Length: 217
Image 1: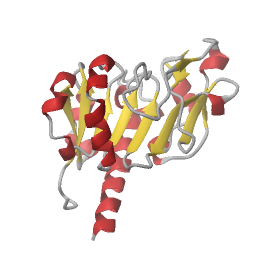
Image 2: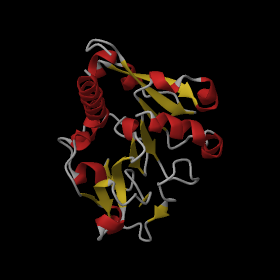
Image 3: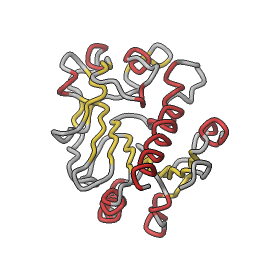
Image 4: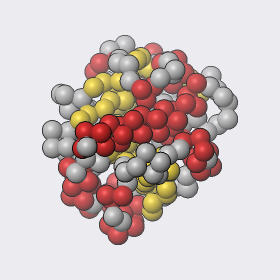
């Protein structure tokens, strides 16, 4: 892929993309493209550098596409999963575990490891939205042992990783965010640092794709 060629991300689910994701100049060379979840089986997934799965996706249907998603990952694809994992769509990802306490302490986000996805964004930026806690996540999808834990909840955040990234042994990368859609979290227009989540993802993805290209030369 030449440096000036577009990098496509499939936004999978029933929802329309947030209007800001149509701002190609802001995310270039990354292009976010809406893909209806029920058309997934008709798509050539290899043309997408990443699949962004919405919290509102039909997971029962996605379970029927489990083998296709696994093949996509095996070939080096990236899945950005938003929301609770209610069905075993991706092997290695545990079933969603809600936090037993929904008070402020139980919903507080703590950074566990630095990562480009969260550059310039603090745990407090994720904990509160318009002064209310809980929008970022209220539980976690248990991570594989070799995943990098990024953010956690409650008093023991390592045991409640709301965000993690996993380089699968068989290939591909899974990013798990067990809350509202990662890419559209900041679409309230309140202008917090969380507005950088989608640009950070685009920047990280571009760097990842370019690194793979260099390794193949």
